[in-house]
Image (cartoon, rainbow, N blue to C red; front, side):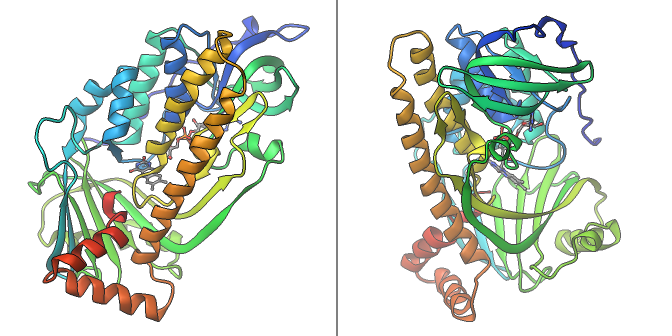
Length: 409
Ligand SMILES: Cc1cc2nc3c(=O)[nH]c(=O)nc-3n(C[C@H](O)[C@H](O)[C@H](O)COP(=O)(O)OP(=O)(O)OC[C@H]3O[C@@H](n4cnc5c(N)ncnc54)[C@H](O)[C@@H]3O)c2cc1C
């Protein structure tokens, strides 16, 4: 057992991209996260030239996405990495929900046999990104690390990008630009485009723990467990003996204090209930928001993934919906670039995925409200649903719909 070490991808001088007047590329993707990489792979599978610019030199640091849904696995199948992802990831279908020490509900994501893929796999985001990068390079995508896009100017028929590198700054043009630069999206801000939604007032501690444990490959979610009273806890098995544990802390928790090993380790020991050895791979505190851009298409500039929409992690809809953005966008963009469809087809990308984002935000907000009730009345209702769920199957299904949409993540 050992902690994950992030790979460092080589920097290549942009000498071949620098020109006066600026070079024009058919397609540039900003951001080599899961969504930008999926878009780049899709482009290459259609024979399109693609340049990917990323300001970093490695994959995602720390613990982020864990759960990838069946629909994502179908997309990853098409992109060519699903076998590898399923081989390394932990497949699961069963989710269990506990109130204090009692199991009150369980679900099976794939109750019938004969499916090619499981309902979910759990795999650390850094592994998924490594696989996507290897596949994109294998297909001939041009990925440039330490290339930070600092400005974008929109024109009717193209976009002009200003790119900062260790060897200086240059301008480059793109007929089409896919912006997948993540939740903070410097490009969205730079272009002054709006994104609206809601910030949730709660904090969660994430601990990625390396340990040998024989818990089944299932999703376990506790409300008010004896080892963490009045809050919730989530347990997921990931690859290579890494277990992801999320502790709800409440809004008043001090993030700096709560991250200290002397605070985290007793929480984990209380949960594990024994003296088994474990190593902390990652600890962080997260808060979250649910919001989306009004429009995902701005002429020749198309937004995808977290840049366009964000959800709470409950429901595992972030990267999963980002893969669906890339899946919806790229065949349409391919037809437009090849002159086989009108640009108007891209408006349907925006319509489809804005609608999907609203659906995802609605479900993840409901889940979050159930986990962190905003009033005493909501909390009383929530607790009654959970208490009844154990004995009354109908209410169990209510609680699943209302609450346990959440516990997929
Ligand atoms: C705690 C937590 C748990 C989560 N769990 C899940 C889960 O179980 N399942 C799930 O589906 N999702 C989950 N998510 C969400 C998931 O992590 C994100 O949705 C996903 O990373 C979004 O991918 P992206 O490619 O849009 O953006 P990112 O992964 O943020 O990638 C953006 C990329 O753009 C680059 N970039 C930024 N600015 C620039 C610039 N100016 N120039 C060039 N490059 C730039 C960055 O370096 C980065 O590589 C979770 C998130 C969190 C925080």
